[in-house]
Length: 571
Image 1 (cartoon, rainbow, N blue to C red):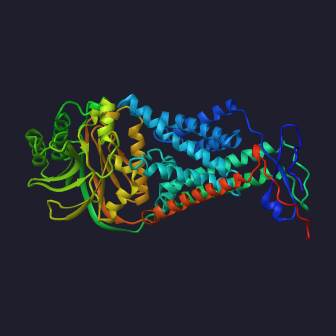
Image 2: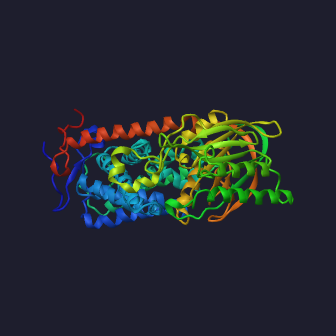
Image 3: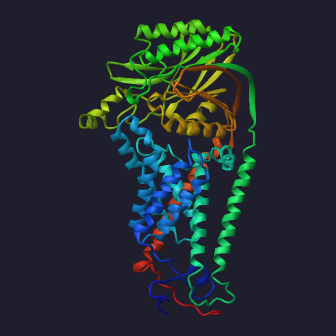
């Protein structure tokens, strides 16, 4: 018995444990020669840049597969584990540095910190893919590494920040058909699987020119056929997933309908300009009131149907209407002008405790009769982790203002329209759209009409607005329900039950309209099984990491595997 010997000055051999040892013989195969790091750098950085182009507003969704394949290829060709991790971090820096560029509207320091932290996700994915790359079915485990990494970033730190989930890039692709069955998290796994299969095939094609060691298994097919086999598997998987997904895009979930409702929406317009995008105090509320008056003038002229309710966006009042008399009068005047309830995005402030809540208020002629408090808050945007420690060290954080307190109840407001109809309004506020179960819980609590209120004034002119709108489209497709998006300055719109855009208002301006919305309750497989499927991917990733680590420990230095004791066929 001996170790595998070299077949050339730059090529070592590796034992194929599954096919060789199980068949009673030792089958050495060539190990791909690592490439110098400087040659891998362009692929790592380029892959990160391609990833950004896969998302809104660019929407070049096939590039998501290529970006994943680029990272997988880099990981496989790196000289060492730490090199693969470093290249993964560079991939992440390129990806996050371009996709989160909108954060510069707030603060360069926050942009730098967010980019540096979120890029760690891709360093971790690269490390997991490296450790598991020699396991049978490596593309599956590489895809599970993406699922594992995205899950970690979706819950940690500070309740996570999975803004650029891989699955969000496919809202306009055939893979969108999987959303109502699996949820976006599992679509991430499917995208990553396709990418890793592409890299797996590319490696086999590259190996065709490499002279393999003498074969000892009876009737073993020539190694050059490997590339054809892998290309076939990859092609069949790609076509199969796109085909099944394409069929799924037309699927309608069973639903119970409760008639139609006319929903007015008002995008008041805001000055924009970073942290102070809402303008001086009460500017945004004044704009909302003026645009509401314009909306009702259109209704009175017969150019729009009369609304049953009007929706204002998040931060439609930047002052607490309970304590600011002018703000209260502006809202009350608009309610009287519309002659119907208004769902007002507002804030509640506690000056004594220096705390606040972002709330949605169902405001009628009798005042506020229903309240929802935002549950998922933006760290360092609405609240400061370790506030007592960080605030003195980073004075710029004072722009955050009072510490926000999350709500605890699902966003389903049980209300009554002027005509006496009972209605349950589902509400999600801005950042909450990246937390699918926040919207699912609103539906479970009886929501018949889904509304997303948002304030993107500080991000005017950036890709953040399109990214968030795309994520909301994913939520609609997962739940197979219509969603009305209402923002301070854009982009407002109505999204269909399949994630299609039915109406989209212009950005940077004031706008208003009335949309006919069907009241319905739905429950899709994704809403029931989404967490289970994600958990299975996460467990698969963790198990493959453990197995890969154990296997790696059994290797000799330099990446060569030690052969098991030779067996004689037939004995």
